[in-house]
Amino acid sequence: MLVALGILLRMILMLAYFPAIMLHQDSQRYARVGGWPMYSDFWMPAGYPMFLWLLRRLSNQLWFTIWIQHVLGLVTGTFFYLSMRRLGVVRAIACIPAAIPLLSGDRLYLEHTVMADHLLIFLTAGGLWAATCGLVPNLSPRWLVIASTLLAMAALTRSVGVVPLPILVLTTSLWVKGSFRARGAALAAALLPGMGVFALYVGGFYFSHGQYLGLTDMSGWNLYARVAPFADCGKFTPPDGTAILCDERPSSTRPGPFGYIWDPKNVAANHFEPGPKTGRDLGEFAKRAIAHQPGDYVRSVLTDLVRFVDPAISPYRPGGGQPREILSFGWRDTAVEARVVQAMSRSYKGTNVRLHWQYLLAFYQNLSRPSGLILAVLLILTGTGLVKARGPIRLGIALFGLSAFGLYLIPVMTLSYMFRYGIPPETFIVASGVLGAASRWPRLMCQ
Image 1 (cartoon, rainbow, N blue to C red):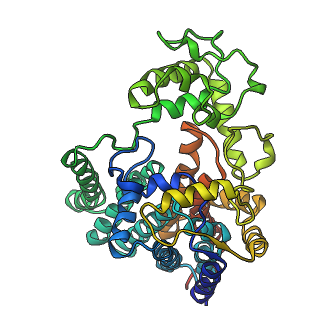
Image 2: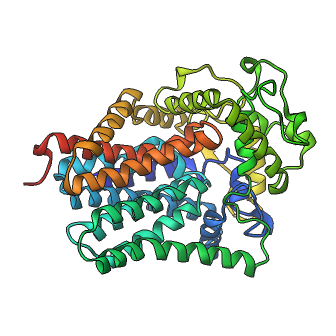
Image 3: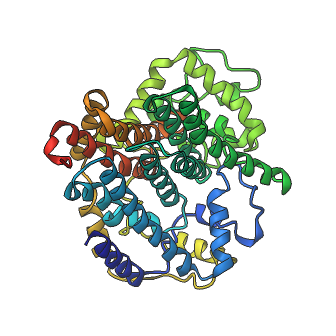
């Protein structure tokens, strides 16, 4: 029934908003339009661009790519249902985590864009499902190989996706019992295939004479943007050549982190050419600010974490991360859309947008979004379940819950809050929260 509803929703969306949402200027970079080299963007890994390239070999009609993404969304929901059932949850309750990727308006929105987040969710969900098959009820190294491979591929779609693979290795090391040989084989199955995927990615980089891996190339710029809104050069000595970065404005009047990256008038962009080389200097500035202002850094990180639950916890300021009102079917900027359509038409056919029932789509998106209170309860259930649960349920909470925590934490530690960044971890925190509830109320488990 849920899958049927998911299919119906996607058919309606394709009819109402054809062929895709064309409001994100990153789309043309992901698509490597106009023959951009695959390893040519220092901001993002090339995993999702490779996926798009493969789809264009089948058809360069944009609607085809979007429809495949919607199919992956349906498969993602199935992964969650199968994972919950494998861990012993009754069918009705197993449908709750599955309903998020199948029916959520926010996930439908991501699937309907040329952006990498939906593929991150799909690969991570598939990897975690394979992990449950590999560890429950008995050890199956073949499934762990699949899990490791999928989770490594997730890290190549968005660099924040690097989180779940180490969690798989950690949970495998703690879960598998028996002889040293058996445990070693399990760890090898959980780790080595993923390392092989990274090796192939790096090999492709060198074979194609690539410019950038897109994994950590701009970590220095990102970390600088994280600290720039509060960095006070009166409390530390900037590294040589970076004193120009000192912002004399009160922190309350400064822009948010993205204002220090994307605003062409910002100090860093005017004095440092964006790229990995200059990022080293900016990264050193950021590390020194964190070392001398740890309280300000922790406060900024915690505030942005809470914004995933309650965006109103702090007032919005320019450059503070896109709010949910922007990532909405109800928001449309025709000027931006025209630029994206023109750019995407260099690699795709059928890029002109036709939109109907916009406010109905936006209404459904808002209606299907979990509230902040629900997210808070799910986080609490996940935390208590990690401590009190036993057996396969605890394993599932560790896999899904720790992955969600990492996906929430890494963006705000290294850059900033953005509503879009919270959608992937929210998908997994629902699963871990349901498992946490099952650990407290055994009637939710199969007898």
